[in-house]
Amino acid sequence: MARPVTVTIPHQLGRDEARRRVDASLDQFKAQLGGVGLGAIRHAWAQDRLGFNAEAFGQTVTGRIDVTDTDLQIEVLLPGLLGAFAGKVAGQLRQQGRLLIEKK
Image 1 (cartoon, rainbow, N blue to C red):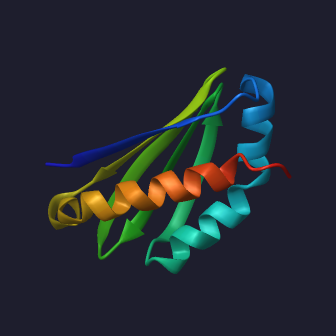
Image 2: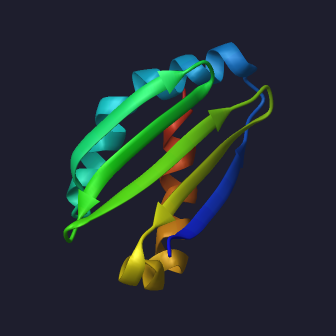
């Protein structure tokens, strides 16, 4: 069973500006995920939700970033044994989530 890891990153940018900044940061975000062993990263927007998935150690990691007027809500589902790294993943999501909305 997959273990969800969820973090919330508050902002005061408004939905449109936050989404623009997330979109502008996607290449950097994907490169950082690749740096921690995630490969074949795919993503797609559906309104204000960015869905993504990647391969890690032969397993598929899925996640989403919901952009709201006041925060980013990031959730990653860690399958199988990857769930043991939930605490470390949560810390990285907080750090990288803040970078997604930095001024570009």
